[in-house]
Every structure is written in C-alpha cells, then in structure tokens.
Image (tube, rainbow, N blue to C red; front, side, top):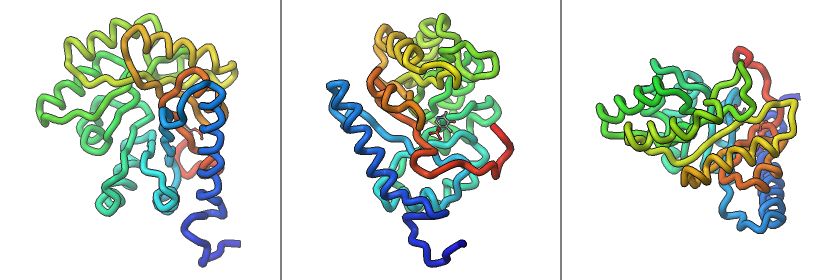
Length: 239
Ligand SMILES: *Cc1c(COP(=O)(O)O)cnc(C)c1O
C-alpha cells in the first residue's frame, strides 16, 4: 500500500540509504581483492526511468554522480533539479543522435557514448560554437553486436586519434556494455587493453550484475541502476 509518510530515502519502499551502503561495501571488497584503493572507483547512479524523487533520495544519501540514457528524459528531469543541487555531475550513458548534440552538451557534464565520426564532428562543431565541451568517453562495442551502439574494437585506436588529435576533443576514457549472454570479463579486459595503449585513464564498465568483476579488471566508473533503485518499470518505451 502506498504510504504517504514514506521517508524520502525510500520511494516505492526501496531503501536507497541501505542499498548505497551495501554497494559501497561491495566496492571496497572488490577493490581490496584487486589490490586497488576503493577511492579509484566512482559510482554513477543510473536514474533512467526513475522519477526525480529517487534522484532526490539518492542525493540526500550522499550520491552526487548520476547517469541517464536519454536526452529528452533528462531534459524533463534535470535542469530544474540542478538549480537547487548544483554539485551534481550528470553523465549521458545512452546513444546520442547528432541532432541532439547541442542539448546534450548543454545538459551533461560527461558524454560516455561517442562512437562515430559524424557524432565526433558534431561535438567539435558545437565546442567551437560555444567554447564548451563535456568530457567525453568513447563507447566500444566489445562484443561487436549488431544491435548495440559503440565502435568496433579494431577501429578504436584510429577513432581515438581522430577525436583527440584532429578534433581536439577532451576524450578522457572508454565505456562498454558487454553482451548479456556472455561472461563479461574478456570484454572488460579488452576495454582495459585499448585504454592502456591509448593512455586513457578512465574506464566506465560494470553494471548491477557484474560490477565486482569490472572492478577486478580496472573499472574506474561503475554504472548502477537496479541494485540501487530496484527494478525499472517500463514507464518509457522499451530500450
Ligand atoms: C541502464 C544502464 C545501466 C544500469 O544498469 P543496471 O543493470 O540496472 O545496473 C548501466 N549502463 C547503461 C549504459 C545503461 O543503459
């Protein structure tokens, strides 16, 4: 039964304070096992499909870095919230269409899904126009899945050079989403290898089901939705 007096920390009966504490304990453990300081790992709270009440609850629990996968949904949720919560950092973790580059560059601090020359060119043009660019990650389609965004691994080095050297874009890391039906470890290892040989420091990899493994393989940013906020309800068209 809905409880109107339900504390802000637990919209829909989900205890975000407790979930966040559990997640941080798991990050500590996975980092410890990997001989890494937990401070190297940043949690991105993925709030796609969740209402602002969930964002607020996570904020009150201490979370400051958030991820969304759609520009339009983010425009509805974030600008107003950020007026009073300016110390938040917002990452775009879903595919970006070139016609939404201006909106995305204005709203997001980090865009994790740069994956094709046309998009890189549009971002460079936008940067020239406004003098501002979000930090960028290049998304690599490590599983080479036809339906998935991201660049084929063999094209990564040349694309990173194009973005950094020719277009002067602030590329700071790589991102991947491993195939659902495969062990993720080889995908994380591949992303790490591409990052190392290109001197890229940040690796956004690891979701609710596999973030401990991602930390073992060098993740610096993990993107968690379900373990923090519960199951997503399909309030938006299916992804
Ligand atoms: C939805 C989403 C996540 C979070 O997934 P969970 O399994 O709920 O943790 C992470 N990364 C991307 C790119 C997503 O779209």
